[in-house]
Length: 287
Image (cartoon, rainbow, N blue to C red; front, side):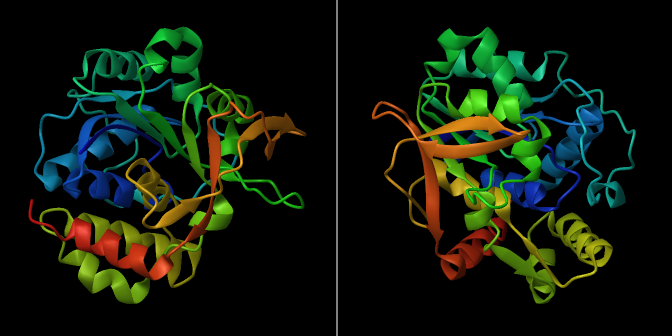
């Protein structure tokens, strides 16, 4: 079993809430903390707390990162479950980076950090608490787009300097980029099965259906839960063994081969059918 901190911008693209449900229900993951990033981070924390209630867990601390930082207009999904502007008093008074550092420093085993939104909180941790970062088992990131002709991607593009700093932080950093993770999808005909997930099914299905309707399509990519599986193994996503580095060029993160000591690796393939069944099978587990 791995210990995990999930850093997320849940509430926009619906894949984040599926990553949260996957992390809670997966018997191979001990979810130690959740932190939120981008925009109204306290609303995002309130949404996370609501979903954790429905998932049947009440002892996972949640901290909000610094609000703001939006660069692009996004499509919401979480507003149909928790109204924007909601503030839950159970949210930690510690900052996101402080909670991360405390969990990493006191955990009985090395912790994985998964950043599935902009890397702002993780970059603060890397800059301010480098001694804590050295104790991580590794960092998993969803972001970037390893395509020279079109490198733009929301997570890394929102704060490219932060993303590059975390990618190049020196430890094990495993990235599921847009090109690979966009292939993992849920479709409208998955809604009945999603709705059956114990406790949280109605909220997940409502957000998923809302997102389909607002995007005017019958599918959406599960970028975040797909990338998250890299913290476990390479059953669903496989890694290119080439050591990489991340550079910021014209406001975007570009990947290039790095030195032999670089811990940065990029996923290069995904078993979409196996991952689809894995995701739905895990969230269907009993609360």
